[in-house]
Image (cartoon, rainbow, N blue to C red; front, side, top):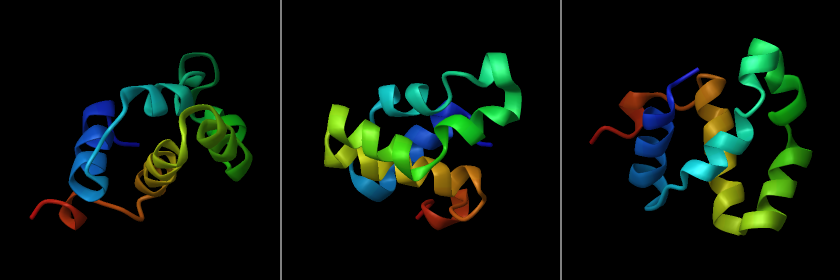
Length: 80
């Protein structure tokens, strides 16, 4: 799971914007639940919720966050 700064860097490079709030919302329960927080906050329903609250761009950024956490988007994909 990449640190916040890496999620923000990827969003800026790949999407042209970044919003720390998106990532805080996705990882907000990590202190209480550890890696189990993903069962609660890393799913399509929560991404929809973020999109309804913050807009389409935030939903795209949340999707990118999940792809990074799952190892499908790596630093080599956006360091150009």
